[in-house]
Image 1 (tube, rainbow, N blue to C red):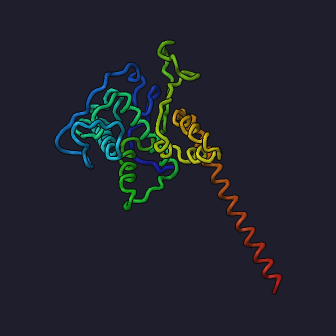
Image 2: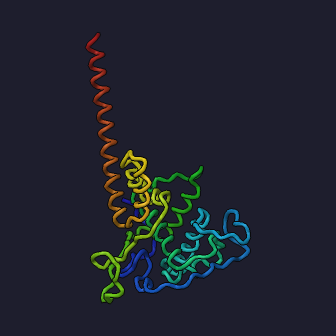
Length: 254
């Protein structure tokens, strides 16, 4: 279990990943993030180019913006406040919708919670410097708050819940790349890669994996991790037994 740490208060009922459920209704038109001359890390893209994916440097800048906002306001920004929280961060992906930045923040939090619950196996320095930095920033934002993927909205209309899974829980079905899913659900991703030897079927299964629901993926990843640990223990026990038998046989030859 992760150690107790200072953090903003737990998310109240009706809040999704620290973002009020009321903010989930409606979608704003795409808008550009402010582009100041100072701030930001890494090399900026060539003038006129369109960045369609979030860079690793963007992930750090996003978390820095959220951490600053949380420190100032006592809680992470709501969905409608994300653009304001990132003002002045000079992101490589200069244009994005409210949904795009919300999904990115949600995935960063899922990754943090997975690492935190696994004991945060990160070492400072070396090639993992950015990952350590992202973990520390995430800790400052969300601390030990539990991961709440979705909470049904009380008194919601039928139209507001249309398209939602059973029980009124909001859907998290969004296509992501396989590499991104490997970071979020490493044990499950490893199982998907080894699920069949059919070279024609593997790409099909990977594409299907890219649309997996986060809640279900988290459950399967936990099961896969438990199975891998069990197999590792069994392998270790078999090795110890083999060595013991070998030593006994060698001893009987004396």
